[in-house]
Length: 125
Image (cartoon, rainbow, N blue to C red):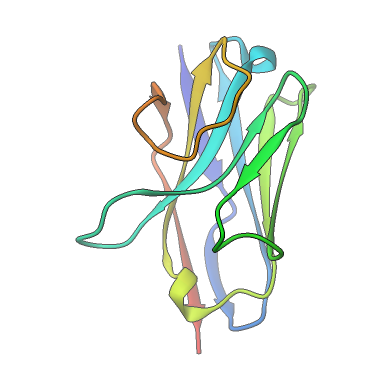
């Protein structure tokens, strides 16, 4: 069964850190792009960061640059998003997504065919 399962969300104070995990199964993880997206209520889903699992190349949105780091563990079929210096505006649901047989990251949701259920991040002020 093809699936992505996110974990690691929760409540943290401003300036704190969280590490999100995205565990994949049922598809060719080692030759995919895995992206993290986030969506606030009533707004479009936007790209945060992406990694190509075949070579480790990455993409990060301006909002994530310098604060969030994406990485992959191809043995565990898991992608991580380390989020530091969190701000109240980071309070949204985070989703991971995948597209197989692609090695060029994209920061928009449309090309991604596989989606997780999302994990809530809440940053208190």
